[in-house]
Structure formats: C-alpha cells, structure tokens
Length: 148
Image (cartoon, rainbow, N blue to C red; front, side, top):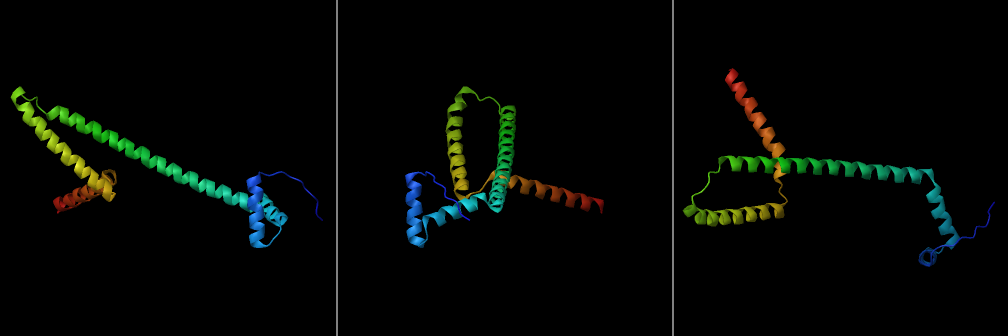
C-alpha cells in the first residue's frame, strides 16, 4: 500500500535528485524513498552514532596529548629560565657587546636547528619518553651491576 506525500525541497536538491535520476535511470520518487528509508533505518542511526563516538574519542585523545605537550613545554621553559637566571652571572659593561654578538650567533643557530627539526617532523616532546625510558634502563642496569 502506498500513500502520496507532497513536500518542498530546495531547488538545488531537486536538481541533484533529477540528475541522479537520469544517470541511474530510476525515478525521483525511488531516490527520495531510498534516502528517507536510509535516514529512518535504525542501523544508519547506530552507524552515525558509532562514527560520532569514535570521532569524539579521537578528539578527546588529541586534546589530552595537546594538554600534556603544553604542560611539558611550559615546565621545560620554566625550568630553563629558572636555571639560566640562577647560574648566569651579570656581565661587566665592557663584555656586553661581545656577549650580545655571541648571543645572536647562538640564537641564529638555534632557529636554524629548530627549523630543520620541524621540517623533518622531529619533536623534542616525543623524544622525552624515550630518553626517560633509556635512563631508567641504564639506572636499572647499573644497580644490577653494583649488586654483583
């Protein structure tokens, strides 16, 4: 049993339905019926929900990584600044010009190295867990040797 339904759609959508109808050699009603059936299908809703959930989970993990990386970056910068301010003695006035020149050279080298690492996709933050794991292994191996 079939019942008639009159509806209005945007002109662009009707154009797309008509073009698909001509290409596939099926009626516009059949296309609209298939689209509505797909939309109403509980399987389609479940698939959409599952896809949405996967996407949200992925975004949550990305946000957690960004938060972790930002924390590591902030802590690294804070420790460096504290260390630098603690150990760097004040310079006498006659040595400041030479120190500024040397500082510019070092900064240019830093920026060049940073640029190369970024181009290669290398990340200091990704190396930290490997460095820590390596140190823990080395410390463990040393303690084993001391026990002998």
